[in-house]
Length: 198
Image (cartoon, rainbow, N blue to C red; front, side, top):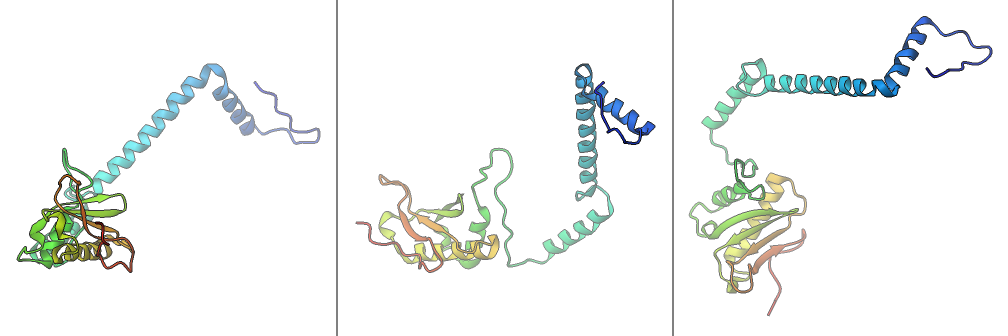
């Protein structure tokens, strides 16, 4: 037991203080350290299980009160179509987290006839910006479909993702030069046109 000095004029410690000191000394001793670690780990595990169990009760479909209201709201939303798009990424086994399928759905709201949106093959998040891969040729730099896709993607990022200054690259189909950039927006005052590269 470690000796605690309280000073020459100090009041003697209370019984509670003496007991606490003894417990602390016992817990910190070499032979009981494993017990303390086991008890601490067990306590933390029990708390985590309790928190996870509480979270399960609040999930939709668990029969708890708040989820009934959420289910009713979800049913009401499905009954009335909305022009807004919620942003999700691909999920499920083997899904690519960089894919942004909601951007393609947003393009279809802009172009129901698929004259421009029909060129889109893939939309991917690459860091803080989006890349739109198309079936357009390398010679289609600054073409109307490329510029439209660039502007629509910037609008999608501003309105549905909350990006203040969206960064967008629209790419041609792959060839010997890779995926050539047909249009891009790298700042707020950028007009989506690419400069002369040849």
